[in-house]
Image (cartoon, rainbow, N blue to C red; front, top):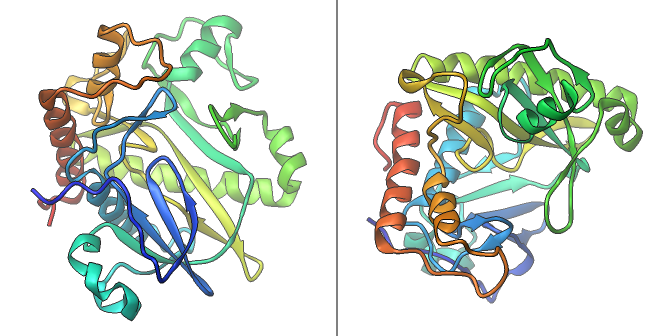
Length: 296
């Protein structure tokens, strides 16, 4: 198990942003994206890092970027340490497996969510309205049930806190009708390909989100792709509609925080070692199931 990385600092590079998980640095026409082992829950970054989490997210995204290049082009320039700028040579061991050199793109101000199963905020919406993000569904569907067809349900990007679900016409108002049509088509095609691929490896992708940008007038896939942080992965062997499903993500962390009745405000509790270890194990298991190979 490698050293846990919760923060990076490269004095010779300009820091663009430090998100909940990713640190981004300016490389001129490109950007260095470093995926740390930070973990957020209930909109707070926790004190503990999760061993191998950053490498799982980065390498699994790279796996999917390569698998889906025939559907839509993407941001990736390199994930090879040989391509790092000379200023980063002293950090090669720390960066290995957890960075991507990416093309800079004009990011679209919507997150492209696709739902294949009725869960999460979609299930809450359906119980109240009989619809998900304004899309009417048949009566009598159960929690976690497979939807008649996947739904494209975009959300607006929030600078802080939760993103907000929006209707397709609202997305069209934000990015234009033609672009909204393009991202909907790409999102549904990506989901169809990935859900079939994952199902053959014993994982159901209940829902996931994609982010797109525009570079040279062309739509490209950016950020992370089909990871346990951006998706709900369920073990197919245990699938049973009618209730919530076990998942390959930070559910152990959420369950622990709920069990101690944390009020979701600072001070943020430190996780017990067993919760950290179990969460790390689930991230690695997701990687290994989908790729068919152990985490390098």
